[in-house]
Every structure is written in structure tokens, then in C-alpha cells.
Length: 242
Image (cartoon, rainbow, N blue to C red; front, side):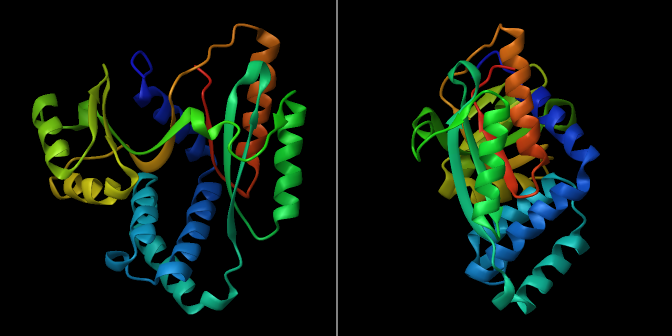
């Protein structure tokens, strides 16, 4: 992943999210509802809920909004009908795309996702067709300017907490974990007072693909924009070298 500024990519995502903060909060609210339904309202005993709360905080969701969402979900457990579904496919020039959705109507979501791929001259594939090109990892991005620790000290703190890997960029630090260790590492960094720009379990491409054809770039961007605008879509992962 060297040569790719994770900070710039995350910052770009957050700027886009800031322009659509309502959607981000709606997405996280749904995730909270499902997590509470599956494991209860106590994050200390519900790993999935703890992970969603970490994501909420990384997106600057107010604590009272998080608590309200948990309480609402706890009192409304029987009415939560959302379910997770994942789609895999190809954009222009074989760019691999994974779409995670949380929906109360799989037929609607499938049609919308398929339409987004088609309008960008891509196609939805079969389950597993591209996921083997990605690694599921806990990923924590730290803004170098916001962190008081040196790179070496931060690395030792992260590795001592159970992180798998640590890397430095010009403007950021990246901590990678096994998905099962993510919450433990994130909590340790939070306890150490380390500000995190992003903290989530994500899909990281094993290799990146460049696009030089302008038409292909426009088509891929069209697909990604349509997916990001869809209220059912929780996350989109791809191996395009932007």
C-alpha cells in the first residue's frame, strides 16, 4: 500500500461525508439498531456494537445521538428488520468493487446496485468473485499533526495492544489489526489519548489498479457516486488507484 496516502483518501471521504452528514448518521443508526438486536445494548458485552460506536465517534457523531440510538433500538428490538447483504462485481477495466448494504428490502437494493454497475459500464458478479483480492482488516488512521507521540512510540503502543502492522506516511500513521483484535487495539489507543481520524473494520485491496482512459474513469466514478448516494449502501470498497 506504500505510495498511497491513506490520510488524503480518508480526508476526502470525510469531506464528502460532511456534505451528506445526514446519510452517514442514518447509516450508523441502522448499524446500531442491528447490533443491539443481535447482541444487546451494552457495548462491553457486544463487540459489534462497540465497533459501530467507534465508527460513530470517528465520524463525529455526538455521544447523546449514539446513546439515543442505542436506547431506541433496545426498546424497539422486535421491529428491526434490516439485514446485511454484500454484492461483488467489476467496474471498467476489471476494477474490483465490493458493496456492503443494510436493507429492509433486498429486491430494491439489488436492483439499485445492479443499475449503478450497469450505468458505469460494469457488472455485478457472483459472491466471492472479487473478495479474494481484498483482506479484511481493522484499520486505524492517525493524523500525524494531531498525534503527540513519535512514530516509534506510537508503533510500540499499537503493537503492544495487539496490532498486526504499523506504517508511516508523510501525513499519517496507519495501524492494521486482525478484525477480532480491532476493538481491543482501538480502545487501547483511545485510553492512551491518541486521536483517531478513522477507525473501522474494512476491506483493504491486496493490489491497486490504475485507470488511464478518461471514459473508464468517468464510468467508474459514476458507479461509485450512484452507490454512495444509495441510502441502503453502507460501504463501498474498490482497488482503483485514485
